[in-house]
Image (tube, rainbow, N blue to C red):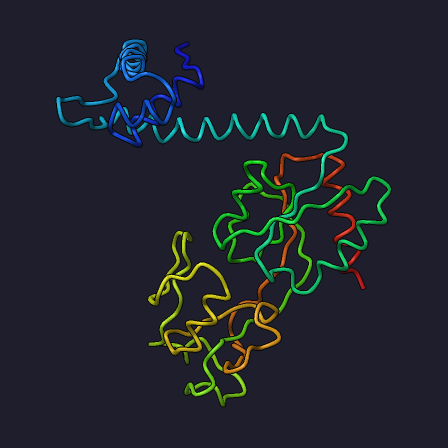
Length: 280
């Protein structure tokens, strides 16, 4: 079986990213001749050409593109495995919770209070992230548990429990044509400009790109867009904005999620506490 060491994958990925031997060597903190020799050795071992070289240009072959893509996933998996192994063996490990600012539906204080009563409770580090990478935090081990919103966040490969379900509202500036309505339907929003979320694949908004709710609310105030969101993300409603219920929008669910392969008591006790905190 042909094998590559992780360091060799790092060489390939660095050169594939930079497409320049000197810059790639500097990034790797090695000499340029050593990198050139290593790349030739890797290509010889694999029996395929990874890079097209000329005196002025370095390009990727299809084989090089494939190795860059899959090699990056392999390195990420190795890094995650190392982090998880270290944390599994650390009896004093803290629990890391990731969420977006304001993305707890007002439940976080109650959850943390309930968790503090668990016999094996640990210190909880709260991590804030953008709209697109909370699931990455859970998959690669940077966080143990996360508060996500379904159906917006990708829950593939994650175990999860629903903590709260709520309706969705459209947020409009106070002078907007829909601001005086008691409720609206999704069809009433046709022709309106909706946000494009930064870093979120498949985001179908046609408006300016936004990275968080605070930025989005500012853009709504200046009449650049409107948005449909879970009600808790915009309460209390900022001055100058109006929230109108959208009667036929699917409800939003706040879920507690974790890597489905993570069966540590550290995670299980937090899940138990979270469910206990929201149970009537």
